[in-house]
Length: 254
Image 1 (cartoon, helix red, strand yellow):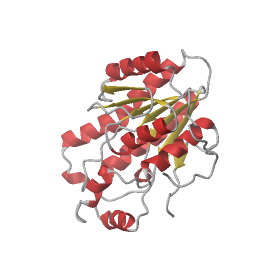
Image 2 (cartoon, one colour):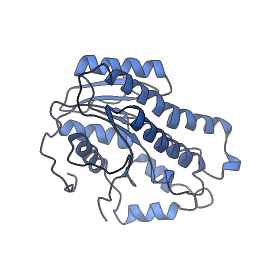
Image 3 (cartoon, one colour):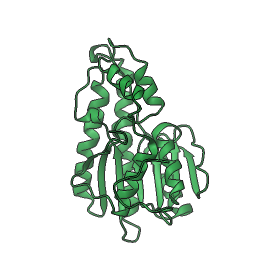
Image 4 (cartoon, one colour):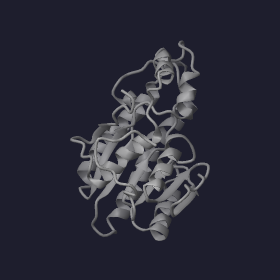
């Protein structure tokens, strides 16, 4: 079970809510789906490789590449038809690479990162915004998963940091354009996932800050996906009200 969050989150707090998570086949996305289902939400989960449905909750899964705008829109429509209008849409799909000095990056990897991390977020956000305008008025929340790398430069993460900075500014703009949506770019902190295993496996020449991430793991200070999910649930329920569009999930183990 996650550590207690500093706001009221009752058992089955998301009963009757519908949540969509992209990039849900592994890592943070899969963990979010599991926790949202435990909290009682119906879950729409998609990724390039079709996710396993979370147990104990109504769900709809799909093999969806977020760079395919038409496929994403069809998935959003299918979720609404099967589970109901979406209350919380989490754009989690993203790639870490290329990693290392930008002068050595493969152009194809750079293009892929821009397509997934920026265009993919734009595609999914557009889908949610369009669909939401046809649904009954309700509290509807868009969360675009960002990163501390959007706000702090890390050697070796030029493309990743730049794409997440783009997500931050994109979300700020959507918040102005779509007053019917509550929009947040959320940096989840260091979350213990397979992506973090990839980070810790890097050498210092490729990623000079690698020792910091290894130390977080060794000291047991990484956030769990459930901890992040509880904060997103709090935003949806109104028990957590960030002052700004950009929000950083606090450390679970300070």
